[in-house]
Amino acid sequence: MSYIHIISGSPSAYSSAAAVEDYIGRQLRRSGVTLSATVVRQLPATALMQQEADNHGVLSSVALLEQAQGVVIVAPVVKAACGGIVKCYLDLLPADIFAGKFVLPVVVGAPGCRLVLEYGLRPILSALSADIVLPGVFAAENDVCISHGGTAELEDRLATKLDTACQRLTSECALLFAKQYEGDWQI
Image 1 (tube, rainbow, N blue to C red):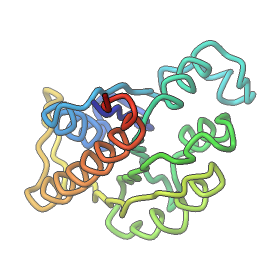
Image 2 (tube, rainbow, N blue to C red):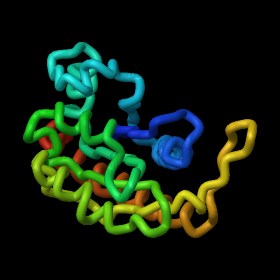
Image 3 (cartoon, rainbow, N blue to C red):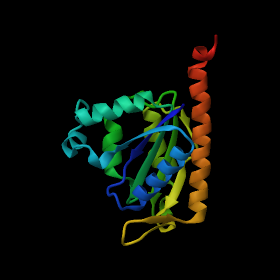
């Protein structure tokens, strides 16, 4: 069974980015993959700000990432750039952490911030050896409706884009998993 790790860069549990990450998690679980997540806001702020790569929380996250065949990064867009908390976290990761993994970038922001996906996040992923970056998804904040109770609903067009991206990620990871463990299945 393939294994996918989600990096959640949402600054709050009740934000548009958190709603998108939650939706992706549900879709991936339905497809039967093994799933884990790093919620960056739950890591110690001092570790992020002072670049303490040897922090226990950071080391645990790196260990989970190293095992994964696929990675989803959900990053909020703040003032036409990926949120600082996501960048601080990505700066802590080993330079080859995404090598040989399928990476699905998802950014959430104002409708005018679409280019952050290609020109803000993709170069960072390349610096972390992401050689298999799937077509990313831009989620406009106005496509996510969060009620006062904290429940979220996604517009149909956004849900369809996310469904397609999740299906592609799980298919690619399943093929990679099969290839990695091909020798184990032969008698």
